Length: 385
Ligand SMILES: *Cc1c(COP(=O)(O)O)cnc(C)c1O
Image (cartoon, rainbow, N blue to C red; front, top):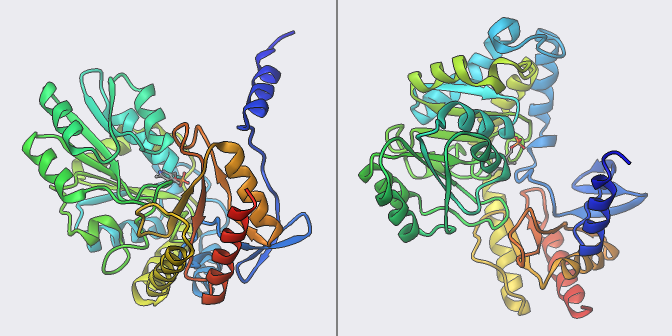
């Protein structure tokens, strides 16, 4: 039989507890999701600020549709690039003091584009061990030899930096997607500058949340374009829309426009999406959603501390609870579900083997009561293991 490996692979995954299935959300209202006719408090979304349902964001999206139509109709180099895209780029440029910004359809595409366009066979790429799959896959597909340094391990990075010469890209994340901890940004900047390497940050989980006006890790630490030559951020998480951007020098962006195949050969994001994304960024800057999120994080950590469960060091909306193996993670997730709470089990290969976990994500939309219910349920579920 042709392609025998398909069923063999599925069986192997099932036997090991690693088979993945989707859950179909039937509808969603006020932070409650409905799956298979049952209702759950949602502690799984990356919509940390509730911007997906923000009235102004939705209204601006509709206005964008009326002005620019549904899809963008073409790639950005043909007729897919509009004033709406330019305005969104301009907002990020001026507020982060970058020479130029380029929009992508997804963070996955942006990371792949960076790798495809920048990594040559003599480029060194040093990536944190916990970098997102979209970057690691891009780097592996490039001609450049990929080296990974231990998670947030500056000593390891230093020794790798000392070993070679030539163009070097050091890649890390502002806030790590599965652990919720932050990169030691100032130390990374100093190391890169001292070794003539370029630092790149994937800020998928910091953008929208951190910084004076919510523009992420770069704003929070006041990182100039020189300190951080390549910044990637996404709109599908805290910003509540979809898409991504790369920010850097005019030369870098001009180069990507000419060389990045994910940009050149892909239909541009709808202009309406750019309108809504820009609205969301201005609403985040002016609103109190971030304060509400930080209050919820503090309350959650305080209650968990009192409960005797142990959490990681994360101070972000992402709060992992490590389990002993994938089946325990699944059992905990299921036990929470019977109590009306939706928290996914995150297993290998999304996280390293032996670090299977529950990934709890908090949001500004959760009430104090929601958080208390979650912690009570966690304690009860843990007791049934
Ligand atoms: C989600 C995510 C991406 C991919 O972004 P999409 O816009 O969802 O494609 C990239 N990097 C990290 C760290 C992420 O968490």
